[in-house]
Length: 359
Ligand code: NAD
Image (cartoon, rainbow, N blue to C red; front, side, top):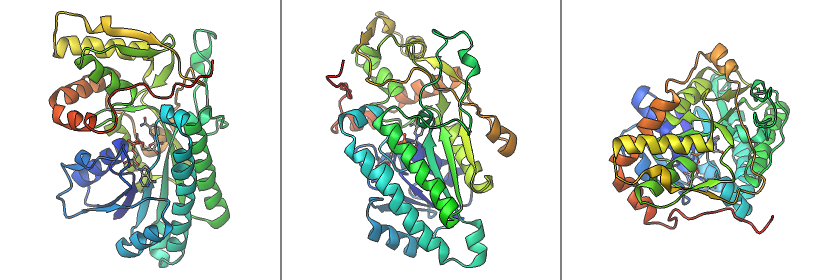
């Protein structure tokens, strides 16, 4: 199979490409614009494979998309290209509307024309797999206010109620993908996953941000009181799940993907401090660097996934526990200083984003 992967130079896309090249006989075309979040060094382990091809293309450029489809003749698409950071969406929503909504629309249109021109056999096996987030579902009840809260989980039929420009743009793209299935018959599948973490994660996101700040002896910023709950999923488990979905998932279906790891942000940060103390001991306690800062506007309190459908239908379950995945992640950042030092030599230097004047 030849799979066209958009956003393959990013955090999750690169994990998917590494998974496919290292574990299957499939070929991959990585289509990526290389924004600040795209980094070809994430692919260094697989980029010399003769089953890997790279195209630096913006998904908003329809002519270039048509050329790539014509030239590479993919059998399926996994669409991960997106602007992905909530804080950046607060500072500047425009790129989110462009890439996540307009870009997805253009990709759907080019994919539809291409799919309609395929012979019957290839037409039947073709899939457009759209990778989305649990943030489209909005906020769940929090155990601090509601004793029964932990019973509430996002299922595939939970109504959409996005809170940030990022999640609203992803929700829009999900709606477009469903409409292209219903109206034009394009064989689409959607996955909505929880917060990922692991190697090659851009340091604006919570876990790498905390690890790198701690290693630099800088304050470890916690938004609000740090009681926000997320369901953490190790990125390599997610990559495996996505491959199961694109190869075995049912057309027109949605699959929620989660890690069964609901943790408050403050717990995540304290766990990282404990692991760092063990792997890179120092006299001053990392935990003493924890600093509470003004919360993110519109910050959802709790996300949690019911991942029973993908487990039941596709026999996928995450392999990593929260403890094992976190330890692997910290070790990876300790072992890969060159990767993150190069990233921090770019435009982003561990600064706070997404603060507005809104009270
Ligand atoms: P990322 O920001 O690390 O990577 C995004 C990639 O898309 C980058 O390589 C970037 O260069 C590329 N890109 C951006 N705009 C583009 C454009 N116009 N044309 C072509 N390429 C473009 O993101 P990620 O964390 O790897 O997330 C991948 C997907 O998974 C996104 O769709 C995101 O919404 C979704 N998701 C992420 C998480 C998470 O925890 N990271 C959770 C749920 C869902």
